[in-house]
Amino acid sequence: MTVLRVILGDQLSPRLANVAGAETGRDVFLIAEVMAEATYVRHHVKKIAFLFSAMRHFAEALRAAGHIVRYVALDEAANTQSLEGEIRRAVEALQPSRIAVTEPGEWRLRENFEAMRDGLGVPFDILPDTRFLCSHADFDAWAEGRRELRMEYFYREMRRRHGLLMEPDGTPAGGRWNFDADNRKPPKQGLTSPPRISFRKDAITLAVLDLVRRHFPDGYGRLEPFHFAVTRRQALRELDHFIAEILPGFGDHQDAMVKGEPYLSHSLLAAYLNAGLIDPLEVCRKAEAAYREGLAPLNAAEGFIRQILGWREYVRGIYWRFMPGYVERNALGAAEPLPWFYWSGETRMACMREAFAQTHDHAYSHHIQRLMVTGNFALLAGIDPKAVHEWYLAVYADAYEWVEAPNTLGMALYADGGLLASKPYAASGNYINRMSNFCSGCAYDPARAVGAGACPFNALYWDFLARHRDRFSRNARMPHVYATWDRMAPDKQAALRHQAEAHRAAMREGRL
Image 1: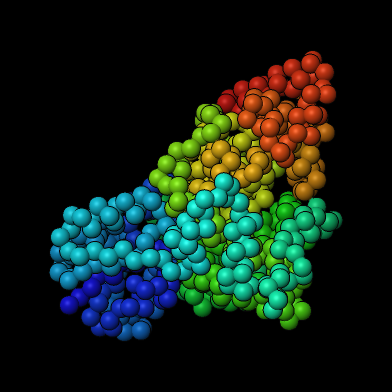
Image 2: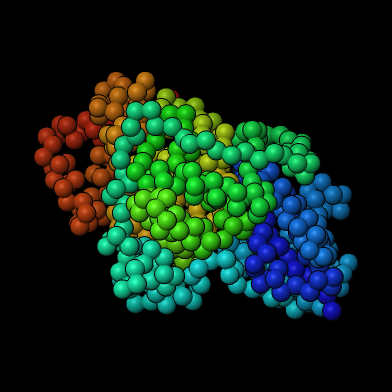
């Protein structure tokens, strides 16, 4: 009997049980490009093109392996333009004995599949997503009974479990679990991105680019140049290039930001990991091997592995443990609408303008720009966290709700009330000036907090702390900040808060 095996656009892995368990020549794979998934948020056109091309190439790989594939292109006349519609249409046409799907990465799809399971009249299996290194049950077992769910302790447990960067006696390589302090150097003069590889666009990718141009003419972002890997083979080439040529310099300036350099020494592998083209453990093993063979320093290998083995697995655990209510959290009561310049990039703030330009052109911005520029501004200005969440989900090629929501709501905006972060990641213009060269030539002066030309981050920072004093003054990591505020004269405090309100007014009116 035929099993209908549904493959989502971020499940392009031959190692998943839903793929590996298929009976060649009998089971049918359903892969569908549908407008409902391409438009539920305003996705970057590069992300749409990347996923559609990767999906089409994955379908070809399945066919080459002898499998039957029912592929529904976006512009196919009979396309119902929803996953549910295409599953129902396939059931009617094929009369399968059962349906199998891999658990999706977003709660809304999990709910949709569960509703279909109860109403289709065909046995419907939702299989675990085994690409991840920590199951839901394992994360819940780790979290149970803990007063605080701090990533650092989860990460140490994952290192032990998988034996990564561990010595035979059970101690961490180099005698420390975390070399993050070595990875926070400001950018040195002339810091640039290492050369990157670009893949030749075959007929499939060219057809997808044409389709995206026609069907998403007003879509967000710049479609070309298009450099994405769209097959597992290409993604592995990208991984090997990163390990050999870029990982050695990944550590020291991991938090640095430079004008016109969107990538620096970051890996660009998240989109491929999150779509299933490469697996997290194989990535971590290659980074560890580079360190063991003397090809990359420990601070670089450890920092990179921590992002995947620690942070990536941790935020997924947080997401599934606290959904569906997690995305509704707004612990700080932030209510300002998302400023239009998040979409247009039209702002006098050079750091924000640079981050928006990189996002628009590449569907990418590295983690410090997301956290300490666009996220930091949203935190300080009190922007509605759900609106910010939907923006981040839309504009980045690596964004899926399981990974994006905890990063945005928890890490950047403190909207979850400290579930994820031990303190708010709030910073003044001084941080951005120290960690980037964005401030030179900006209309605003990072050394000024009030008056004409004062950097908006400065007054907004102090106003944020004053507004939320009842919550944060008892935070063990923040007493020195409030001590500084308390030493200010009352008229200086009043001037800062007045300046902050002027910045918010300018933000609302499109003048910032």
